[in-house]
Length: 326
Image (cartoon, rainbow, N blue to C red):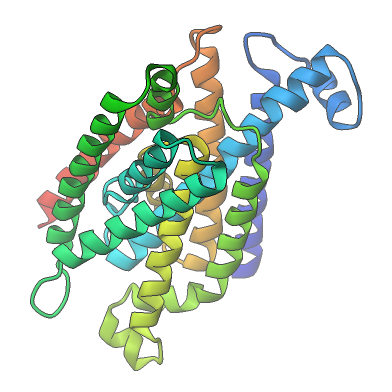
């Protein structure tokens, strides 16, 4: 029965993802009929097919991939921290990736180097946060979150510095990119492949992560290599975040909102929660990006602004609830 329930939930999420992608292809300053979308996807030609295949489809697939990457990274961080406030954006990982990618953009490097710089920035911030939050014997969750917020603020200052010395011709693109913008996504395939690889890598670890939620001592007693699992998961979370940031810029709170909502609905079984978070994050970001480019069309909003409007109130609610629990 459990396996049937898992399959049913994933099937529903897949249908929601397909509906979100279809919505992104249909809606816009130039409405496209579903029949025209189907004709374009099945080999049709013409003006509408060009709009669907060259403009909207790469952007929608890229937004889906980035949302899935951020949600999966957030779910992994929350499991390891045993705290629903864990998130690549809150812990400064997204900020570190942004600093690395902007430095590469400032020096005019190619896309490959931008991705590498984003990963290096994310991983260095990860090491810095966990190093500074390390107390006597192990890190402390409250200190970890506080350190992440402070380091994230430092990354924000570094981003402001880079923007202040950037050439005028690239400043506007950098500014929209740092606020999160899927408009410049033309090659979504690398991000989609990384998302698929990330899901395939974490699914065999779902059982060990379920045990790790109960505590390091119990996990070690049951044969889980705690340190190796932690470092591998931290490394993977940094990689997922850096790819998302390099693809669509700094988009906050997807990694906070989606895993928490999925956990409220589905429970804390990582075998279901991790793939569900990836699907839910991708669907949410596709819908948010569709809203960002249609709400004041033909002008477009950075999608990171909309995700922040959703994430900030939820973050404050979770923080207040944890304070009452403490």
